[in-house]
Length: 250
Ligand code: BJW
Ligand code: ZN
Image 1: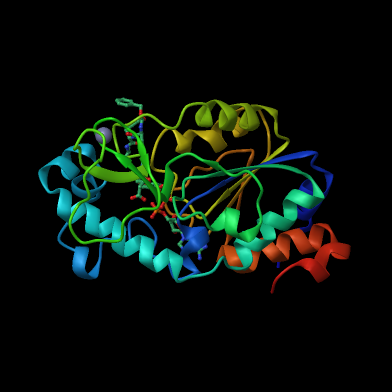
Image 2: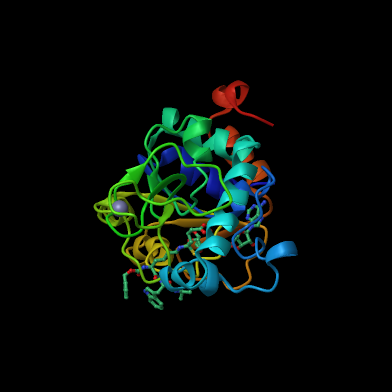
C-alpha cells in the first residue's frame, strides 16, 4: 500500500526529478552494479574494472566484462518500472536522470534521459576520444583506425568527469523540482548521490524507492517506499492518476 500522503505529493507536483540506479533494471534481469561482480567476475573489485587504470592494466579483461554486459542488455527488455517512468513524463514535467548505462529508459520511451555515467552501447578511442559506431563485438580489444589507441566503452569510470552539461542539467532539476524520486540506487557514488539531498535540503520532498533502506539517508523531507521499483512505480503513479492506470504496466 502506498501512503496517501505520497500519492498526494506526486499528484500535486509540477516538476518531478527522478534519479535512477541499477535497481530499476534489476527486474529486467540486469544485475545491479554491486551484484554484477559475482560468478565469473567475483574475484574482481569495481575499482579494478571500472577505472581507466584497470583498463590500462588489463584491457582485454575490462573490454570483455563490458562486452558480456552489452550482450545481456541487448537481450533484455525495459520492465514495468522503466515504462511507468516513461508514462510519468506524459503526466507531469519530469526530468529523468539516470546513473545506468543500459539505455533501458530510452527504450521504454523516456525521450531525453540524462545519462550521467554514459552509455554502454557506445564505444570510443581511449586516447583520442573519437567515437566508434557500432561497437565491434569481438574478444580482442579493437584499435582506433585514426591513432591506433585502444577502444573502450563510452561510460564514466571512477575518477572521470561526467559528460559535459549532464551534471549541470541534473543539478538544475534538483533545485527546481517540487518532488524528487530516488529509485533503485545505493546512493553511494558521487556526484550523483548528492542530487536527492540537494533537493531535500531545500525542503523538497524526496521519495526513496528501494528494496532496502540500508545505508540510505533519513531526514525530515525524506520518505522511504520499500519494495521493488517495477511494482512500486506503476502503483504510485497509477494511484496519483487513476485515469492513466490503463496505460500503465502491471
Ligand atoms: C532495488 C531493486 C529493485 C536492487 N527495486 N531497488 C565525494 C566523496 C567521496 C568520493 C568521491 C566524491 N566525489 C567523487 C568521488 C569519487 C567517486 C566516488 O563517488 N566514489 C565513491 C565510491 C565514494 N566518483 C567519481 O569518481 C565520479 N567522478 C567524479 O567525481 O569526477 C570528478 C573528479 C574527478 C577526479 C577527482 C576528483 C573528482 C565518477 C563516478 C562514475 C561511476 N561509474 C560507475 C561505472 C559506470 C560504468 C559501468 O556500469 O560499468 O557507475 S560505478 C557504478 O556505481 C555505476 C553506477 O551507475 C554507480 C551507482 O551504482 P547504483 O546504480 O547505485 O547501483 P548499486 O549496485 O550500488 O545499487 C543498487 C541499488 O538498487 C541497491 O540500493 C539495491 O538495494 C537496490 N535494488 N533491486 C528497487 N528491484
Ligand atoms: Zn584514437
